[in-house]
Amino acid sequence: MSGVFRLLVFCMMALSLALATSVGDGRWQSKVPESDRVRQNPMAAEAGSIAAGAKLFRQHCASCHGSDARGRNRRPDLHSDRVRDATPGQLEWLLRNGSLKNGMPSWSRLPEPQRWQLVTFLKSIP
Image (cartoon, rainbow, N blue to C red; front, side, top):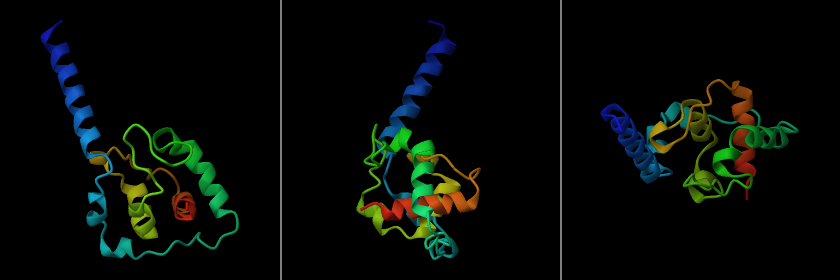
């Protein structure tokens, strides 16, 4: 095995370990600015917003969080108190900005109304 290949394998393993040990630590919430934390969900009262959010969840989120949102492969259970207690603004901020340290990519490419539909769906989870 060449030295470069060994270094690459080592770096990949270290990154995997770092992600696995920090996934779902919840520290992202402390990074949300107050102006975002208090934002209200403009899609919350929209008819069909939960169903649209569920469809987006299946398309973009279920591969990591599971089709039942219970989490998989050390990804957070979205039925948790941490998600239930998060404000809509905090959840939209997380979707927009991601938390790479916690293995959460940014979904800023999704239009804002779709991110809010995802938030509506997440807040509907019992």
